Length: 196
Ligand SMILES: N[C@@H](CCC(=O)N[C@@H](CS)C(=O)NCC(=O)O)C(=O)O
Image (cartoon, rainbow, N blue to C red; front, side, top):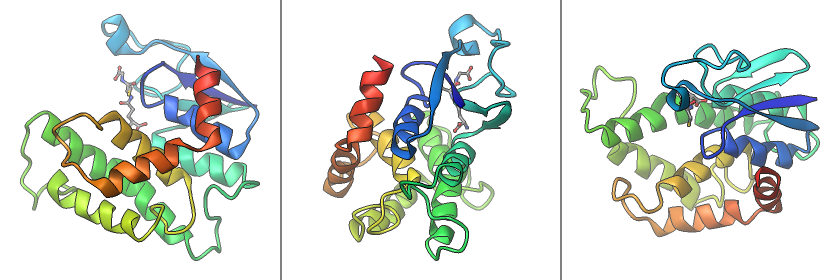
């Protein structure tokens, strides 16, 4: 049984979507985060910094979104939501998962916080450079790995959905269609119902 440590309307919500996609048996444990409680880390949350998401698989703790995504798709391979070891698409899968927190999130956050980090010293690139790379992957898609939907799409599409109204990200019909396609999946509807 997977336990998802969750706070509504945060990055952990997308993992209800992924848990539905992989058809894992799961329960949701609501936790508070330090943002919500003025600095206190919820002792019930196993994330080392009290952030969400984190999961526990009968006591095996996994934290950080790409690690959780990879863990769940390896652990519950039935619906082929992530390419497994030996699959040629595994390389692209691991790359886009790592890119999500290594490049994409820092790129968005530096833009959001108006903090420019020199490209040559940062480990990431400005969002204006990251977006064309993602759009290129999705445009020949329809998913980030090509024809195959994966947990990487859960991470990217839910983030784009969050920033849909933000002037921070340039409008892109490719991204708009991509978000619609991913959020139209039955597992997403089930996740919304489960969270409600
Ligand atoms: N790098 C983490 C980020 C997790 C994260 O920042 N979560 C936010 C919610 S969206 C959080 O828990 N914030 C509360 C806090 O930092 O106290 C991941 O991708 O899983």
